[in-house]
Every structure is written in structure tokens, then in C-alpha cells.
Length: 81
Image (cartoon, rainbow, N blue to C red; front, side, top):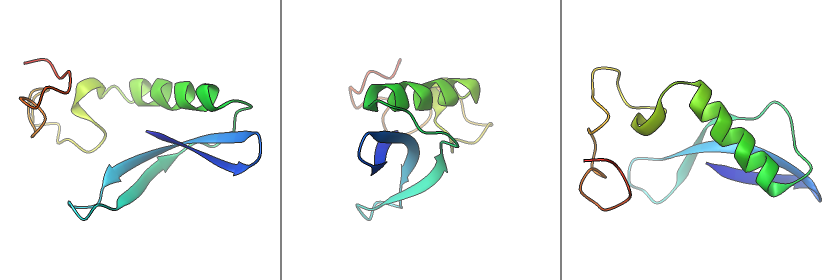
């Protein structure tokens, strides 16, 4: 999750994913509305992610994989084991 500032004082959340280990990021979703604060936009993005019902799996994890699937499971990033 990231926040863009298209104009001074106007903030929009942007959902990004790693573009295949290239060090680049790909936009996969963005807000339809903007917010008056950075934290408001970030909170709106996290809320939207929660509404997607994907929790710890992330927006691109296959439904066939459990919440513990993926390379971060043992990386100490706060992902439940």
C-alpha cells in the first residue's frame, strides 16, 4: 500500500505489487476518491484491502493457497506461523 499526492494536499491510496523481482512496482488498484491527509488515504487503502476479504494472503494470492503460503512466512515480517 502506498499513497500518492497528485496535487499538494490531495492524497490517494495506491495498491502495488512487486513486478517479478525486478525492483519495480506495478499498480494493481487505486482509490476512486482522494483524501485531505496522507494518513486518511493510507487508512482508506487499508480499509479497502480489508473489505476485499484477503487479510494476510494479499491481493494476488491464489484462493487455493492458505494464509501461511508465500516467501514471507518465516521471514519475521509479522506473518503468523
